[in-house]
Length: 245
Ligand SMILES: [Fe+2]
Image 1 (cartoon, helix red, strand yellow):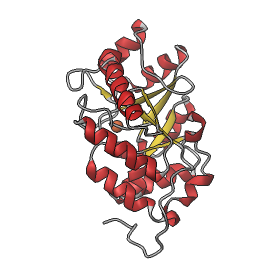
Image 2: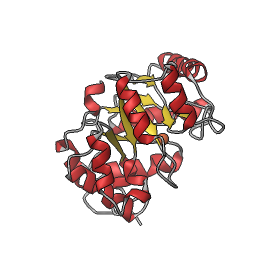
Image 3: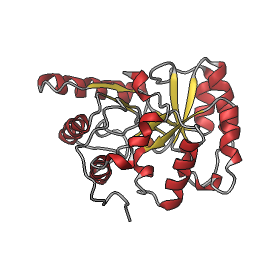
């Protein structure tokens, strides 16, 4: 299934990426990691792969993952405390991965406090079933509010695959794109991998993210990272991850 089983193995080195800006490492608040000990173990292992900063982005999805700054920031504080105690030199931040739905659109309109990172970046996602009817409106309103939307894993929205121009339309509206590292391994299938590569080739990708949820994701990323031939081209892809350091 995966194409990383090649013979040209090298030491894992994702240090050129610098900062990850999409993960579900904060324990117990969404469908990502559940226990603090796993969070610490994953952070150590991601650091070994070369990441120097990890920006955690728990889901905020009304009725499913009802998070807010009040549920996310105290967990961030306890992870940071633990890392300090253990003297693990990784910088940890938190933002969120906002589901674009009616509730989110209302929150943007009300001017609710939203969790951003870097240069006023805000990570947004949609259902994998169909494009959100609020997408264009939300991109417009976020930009009006001085925030810069980044669409998480555009390559995973298969409803866009037959109409690639839809991606260009979102770029024209000023939306940035983040693709998943795991998409490049073929973890989500060949079509997703091909679209991720096409987006990169067309210079439509600003960020890569791990979208780390569980042990299998980490294992696949670790295997992928062993073969620089598979990801070395990312060094010249004009990614902005390292600007987050
Ligand atoms: Fe995610």
